[in-house]
Image (tube, rainbow, N blue to C red; front, side, top):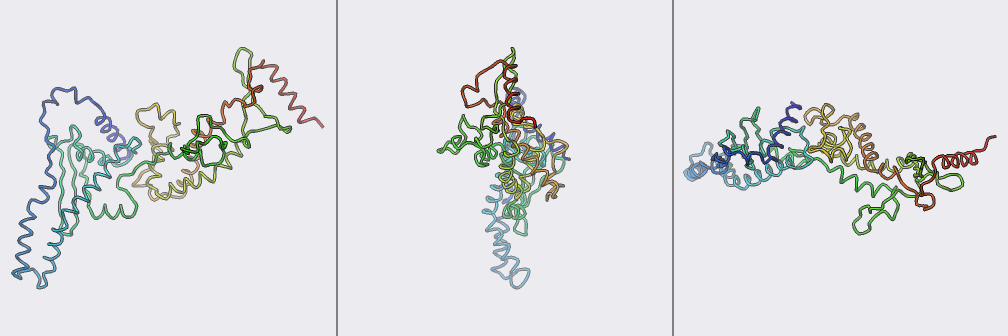
Length: 367
């Protein structure tokens, strides 16, 4: 089922985003019918029902002497229109998540189909064989029904059940946290960036952002401990080196707090794992794809893996840190040219290595 979810979700997403149907003369000539008469059909007989119940109460011909059943049914019919509007609004709001750029395609593919039917996407019309129905139930709840050619089985949602989920802080359709946005913010909070790297007005990192001096490796005499790199043609240059262990110790508490917040809404953590963390791709790789890499066979299932076991929570913590370190902090520790102008100049590679070796021997004399 998980594999079908991915295939159908990606297929429907591609169809909905494509302009192909606009260039098919046969489709342009097709008289599609998107009028499901959702509310008209749901309330078709309610006027007659209301009149009959009202008459039974007035004539004292109720099922029971206290007319409790009839009174409850009158209340149900009176409150039904407002409940329908609220229910349909919740359905539309939940299903709209499938159109987010980071939507996790491991979710039930019927959500994607239902949104296509509800929003009148091309080829998801009533005349294409799709069904959309709202039913008022005797227990005062309401039910919406989606079905059609691409549904393996109908999608049925009850208003009371959906309300209970939303009130408890859960969602029917899970929104994927924007990990990229969160990690850019985290960069400004972890305490490893130089104070001048932060734009005080926007709270964002400046174009010249760099890691604070305390994390740059230095020699015993206070000079910078450079890494010499070969730039070709017998030339070399210095690059700064960083205390990566010290950086990791500094950022870990912040990352732990961030992950704890994510795991407080486990369904969102599953989405983050499936879309960002589990796939082991980089931000640049994802940016070059039409669709973010999917965790595939290591993806977590909303049905089977929730609630998350402790081993998965710990794995999420580890992988989240790796993703942050590799995709966000690493860019500030690689290929960083010295701030000291004289040390930033290109030099003869062999001469530079000889001087570096002499400096090491001077700092570490043989006993």
